[in-house]
Length: 427
Image (cartoon, rainbow, N blue to C red; front, top):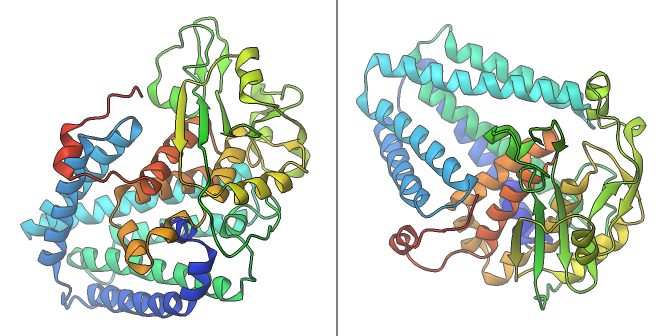
């Protein structure tokens, strides 16, 4: 979440705020250690009921806003709000059995996340995959500790869980602040957040001018681009591929358009072998899996040769110059990789380049802090984390673009109006 919030605020804000971020990281992680030790020693100085009330209020607000959400965001809001509400009720109940249930719930979450991180790192083999793999091992160890909190008891579960989250958050903040302090003028955060070697370092002017026109994210969903009616498999069809009644596979597509000149749409120049025997080898983000790529000329020509995109997300506030410079550098390398350099990842990193610093024009620290109270930031961060540990897909790109659109173009009316004016757009 922190990386994405800093990206939207821009490199200039980050460089100026680097000392404050470092101090906040040290203090936050130090406070996390105190909270964690409180759970280990069983002193229970941590204000459980206050935390439970805050969590309950957060869950009710999230559930309230879920009624006005659309697409996958509605499901995420209901899931997040429901889980937070359940946890808050367990905390406020104060029963010993509630502490055991919380330990099982938190431990299960860390256990599943750790397994996913380990599996994705082992299969995809992206840069620094060993480091990520061992971070998954650490999550499994912490999950086992929550299940069997020797030598403590389950009544310290909340303090241990909250303290660990605070420690990790503070630790992540410190290296970010150091890298920000060392950043040269003109270096972009979007290039630093992308996989190493994917985006060349580009220089940008200090001032960010608002672009004229629009920026359009085109998504061909697997279901929408299938030639025939696909077999109903909701999650698989949305995020991976759709298979029709004749066995034809459709994986969808993503493109980014800034009319009238710029169009980012990457294809492999020749079909990739997707046979079951080569499936796991194809998923590896290694140089051997790079194939020649092909950039489409324009949306009009691509739609004429295939079909119209069935989802469009339009941005009116973006940095056209940053996007243009990103594209001039990115297009020099005409290769395609199914995992780390495909159509959706090209759109994701191009969109991040275009949105870097757009929020800094509307305020400083106050706007930065307000971002953390927007559920869409949490959604966007989770989507980006899942995509970068496995692969960007058109389905993930669609949800990511929608979440970023809500952050860059927030709704200006009240929650009650948002709940009444429900979005009627299709999934």
